[in-house]
Image 1 (cartoon, helix red, strand yellow):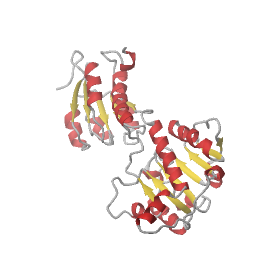
Image 2 (cartoon, helix red, strand yellow):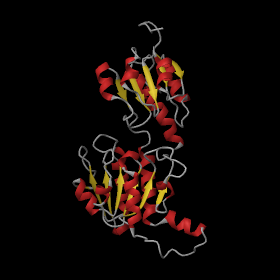
Image 3 (cartoon, helix red, strand yellow):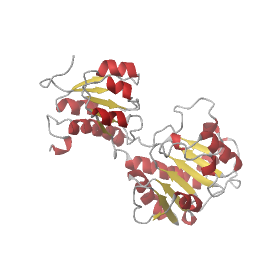
Length: 319
């Protein structure tokens, strides 16, 4: 049944990813919404459960033009992440559907995860740990680096990239950055992509997934790195071509890689990148902490409330 002007607006959660939606549900209900939880990424199930909804809240579920055509009441799609690459933005613009994201809920966590991964590679921690577990009490074969002699390259200088640069800057000789849109924070030298790749001992990726960035780290790009350079990716898995990275690790062009994101998640049991002796892989958790889990859910719900003229005052306006 289609909602009328006098009925309560309807907000629908599609897929629930890792987080408890209860604080968001409570916030939406405070603001006068009826809330449904579908807990599915299946397009047909989402359409069936959200046909009369004004708001659609998604985790990783794709929102396609075909789905939008079958959701005539929809006025806002709210993602549970910084990225909006799973949403057909052009179709939303055409239909007058706003797209809202959660830009700052886990900036500190993701930047800190990238910092921890960077230092782990610089000091060889995952590889030394594996050696000891395998009965080898000798680290002299591992290339261990002095942080204060290193140049760190940061690709993407938005909130997270800039936060990472500020965290690592006191520990290293130099931080250089590339971003075609954002200016470098204080203490970071901005350069072209080629300049940053050529100068850096370690590259940390903080770029969104776009037509321009998907697959940008292919064999040709990886060949631009300094021999033995280190690579950290807490951004998007599809920035890096897995086969190319495996080849670069095998021939030593890349000394080691730390990855919180992969092209396929979860990976296959025999994924050669996960199993590679020169990788450190975590299960897409850079964003996660008790605080960020709360903030992601609340900020996503708040975006819907802000977009659709809330009945109740915003959470930050209450005492």
